[in-house]
Length: 258
Ligand SMILES: O=P(O)(O)OC[C@H]1O[C@H](O[C@H]2O[C@H](CO)[C@@H](O)[C@H](O)[C@H]2O)[C@H](O)[C@@H](O)[C@@H]1O
Image 1 (tube, rainbow, N blue to C red):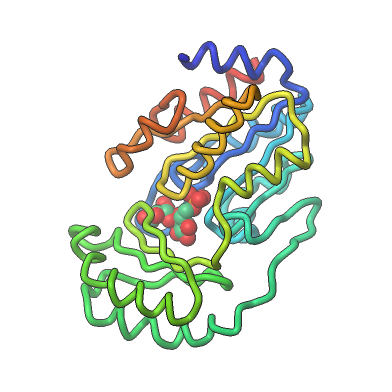
Image 2: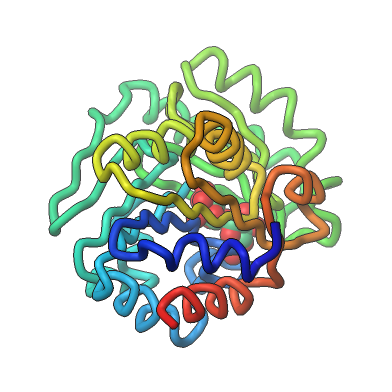
C-alpha cells in the first residue's frame, strides 16, 4: 500500500472515519524538553477541518491528557477525544475520566530520584501525576546514560506495581494494564468507524500498529502510518506506510481533507 491508496481509502467515507494520532514525534517534533513540544503549524487547523468533515479525531498519547491539551491547543477541535497516559485516562467535551491515584506513586516519587542520581546529571524525571518518566535525551548518549538505570528501575517498579517501558530516549514507569492497542480498540468500539487511521512514531505506538493489523485481518479498513526515525527502526515493519516527521503527518491530514 502507498500513501495515496491509504489516503483514498480513508477519504472514501471520511465522515465515518476515525483518525487517531500520537502526539510527541507524530504531531509535534521531538525536542529535548517535553515542555517545549508544540504541534507543527497548521495541525490544529487540519484536524479541525477533518472534524468539520465528520471524521472522529482522537489523540492517543503517553502524556496526561491535560498536558497535551495545554501544549497543543487541540481542545478547539470539534468532538476531540484524548486518550492520555496510554489510555489510562480519557478526555472528552472538557471532562476527564481518570483512574484513582495509585498509593505507590508517592513511594515512587521518593525513591526513583535516588536511582537516577547515581548516573548522568543530564538524566531527569518527568512527573505525569499517575506515572513517572526517566528522560535521557539531554545526555550526550541517551541510551548509554539510561542503560545502567534500567535494572534498578525495573526492580523498583516491580516492587511498587508499575510497568517499565522503553521510549525514545526515555524509560517510562507506567500504570499497569494500559497500552495504545487497548485505547484504540476502545475508540473503535465507541465510534464504530467505517475506517481507522492510526499514526505514531515510538515504541509505545507498536501495540496500536499491531491492533490495526489485527483489525484489517478481520476485514476492517484499518491503516497504520509510521513516522520514520532512526530511533525506532522497527516501525518500518509495523506501519503500512512511513512519512517524514510531523510535517509528513500534516501533509497526510491535509490531503485527507482534500
Ligand atoms: O505517546 P506520545 O504522545 O508520543 O508521548 C510519549 C512520551 O512523549 C514525551 O517524550 C518524548 O518526547 C519528548 C519531547 O519531544 C522527548 O524529549 C523525549 O525524548 C520523547 O521520549 C513525554 O515526555 C513522555 O511523557 C511521553 O510518554
